[in-house]
Amino acid sequence: MNEPRCVSDSTGDKLQAWIEEMAVYMKSIDPKHLVEIGLEGFYGPSTPNRVQFNPNTYAQQVGTDFIRNHQVLGVDFASVHIYADSWVSPSISDAHIQFTNSWMQAHIEDAENVLGMPVVFGEFGVSAKDTGYNSSFRDTLISTVYNTLLNSTKTGGGGGGSLLWQLFPEGTDNMDDGYAIVLPKSPSTAKIISLQSTRLITFNSLCSWKCHWGCKKKHALENHDEL
Image 1 (cartoon, rainbow, N blue to C red):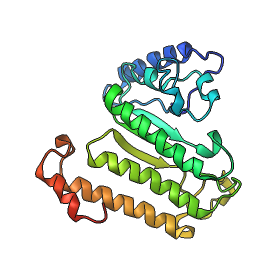
Image 2 (cartoon, rainbow, N blue to C red; image 1 turned 30 degrees about the horizontal axis):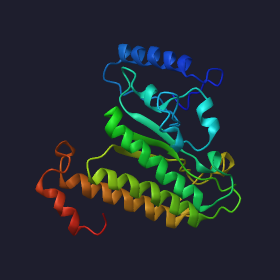
Image 3 (cartoon, rainbow, N blue to C red; image 1 turned 180 degrees about the horizontal axis):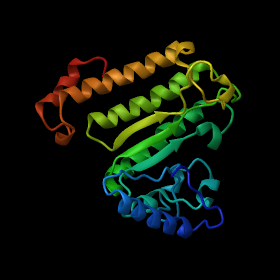
Image 4 (cartoon, helix red, strand yellow; image 1 turned 90 degrees about the vertical axis):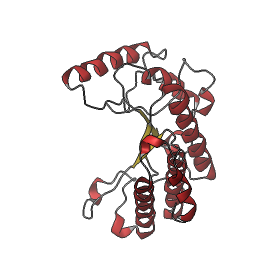
């Protein structure tokens, strides 16, 4: 599933019924298969107190409901996307970073406190076609996402990971939708991605996730500047 919507039913009932049917069906075929919905993460009618975090009012009209949809039997982890340049404004500004921060924090909190499952930010990025775009802003956006997730990971929180949209190999520029990142041509971005990988490897080598940092190794983070 990826970015399901049902704009003909803003109540979300039709999409909810479809998710309920398909999640159980998937589990009937492969009980050990992890199932997610691929939602963009918009809050809906079930949580009117959370719609303030949506990027715009239209987000409430597409038939999705982050909390309700993820409470379906058979769904294993929550999914959210981050496209401030599509949802907030096509012109690059600090508002994109502010939105990304609040959007991620809200969903991490709900994943922990309401859903009881990890949340993966399955797509995020910024288009080079946006007005005012520059690679420095892209690096700031990526660092914002990575730092937010790392802070959640350090405390045993619900931030389960992220997937950058999107990495391209050299020679495939003809397929670039504006979001492509070719690492050999983007050394600063490649460094940020490499650093995040190093941080996570270091983190995972210190302690089992099962202890949620309740053991002594939690304090080992204080001696690792890379974290």
